[in-house]
Image 1 (cartoon, rainbow, N blue to C red):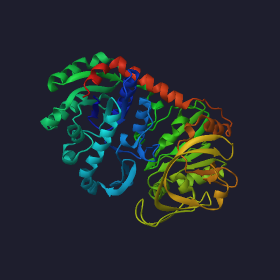
Image 2: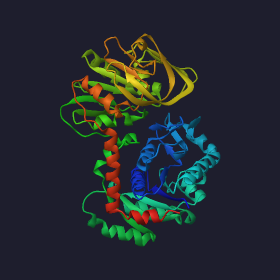
Image 3: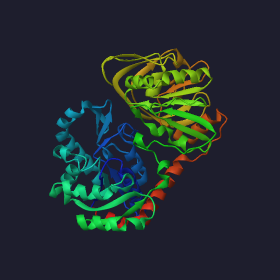
Image 4: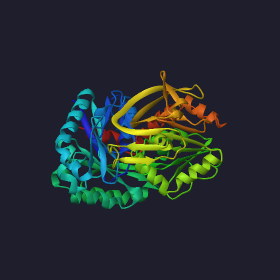
Length: 481
């Protein structure tokens, strides 16, 4: 009979996604037909599925850990924040609506049905489903309409393992406090706990670990030390954006926009020994020694144009161009480089038009039709073939489109300035292609280390080894039912 197990956390960012990915790989290596599932996710970092849908990037990574292609059913509800209080609602891979946080709760009863339908289809096709919760079950004020944690676990009868994050401190209170605040029927779903992100001598937490067992009556499945290679895996949360600190080399600077999206585009660059990648946060000036400035994707192009200007980055980028520097805009970043961005129907905020940076002679109009597809393309300048994907609204036209960044089949894609230093493209994921990445870096006189996909796969194996060494993985998987 197919079985399922759910990993919930005492809070956001406790490492649930990584734990599920590691357990998926560990189960696969045992010969189990396993698949990941997350009922509801909130992220602007999305992956395109073969059927033309979109799911959270973490579930795509977990699918890779299982040896599977990403499917829309793996993340049936995806919320993509557009403002501080509103998000686009994606259901089973397709856009349903844009909703305020308050109004979203009115959609939840029908969303639970979609969640359970997707879960049932996955469960019918696999021997084991490893489910990832969202946020924390201790948010009991949201329990009535919950579809992400205990609401799902109870509806689908899936046992729960509670993960606590010792790195942020207070892990004893995290776990004991969660039990104290949960409804007894919800607490009864929890089969045990584990501790994540430990640094230092594990023996120093023995007494704390025992205290949690005694106070909760829950079984402990181990304490997991910090996984040092986590940065080698695509990050889903912009808060996790990081890169090794290097001196010298090609200096690439990416602007961390307030609604940054699909930022895992940059992960392969961070792993190049000859590249110094700076993820530039708000309030910091673009360094004068930057060779390439990247404007990444965003869920709110006009909103992030305002954010960019508030940081003074428009002036910094203009100065960078005057110094002879290069600029690449990806998706929303490409739209920003043009002369204007029009959103007449208010698809990403209030209707209106915003002046762009004017570095490319193009203009963009937002349209309701969303482009979701995987593509094979050829880089116009180098002739390098590569794989990527599109996930955007809006159409961009103008004189600089006559100098395309790439070709998709026979169709031109993107745009370049007459001198070739300003580039824009709607294609995500291109730097993950070893050939394309090598071609781009070669243009800056920098060699590339091939094998990004192989490195990600090896890191998943290393993660599974890490879990096997420090957790009772066999005991965890045995809790599934």
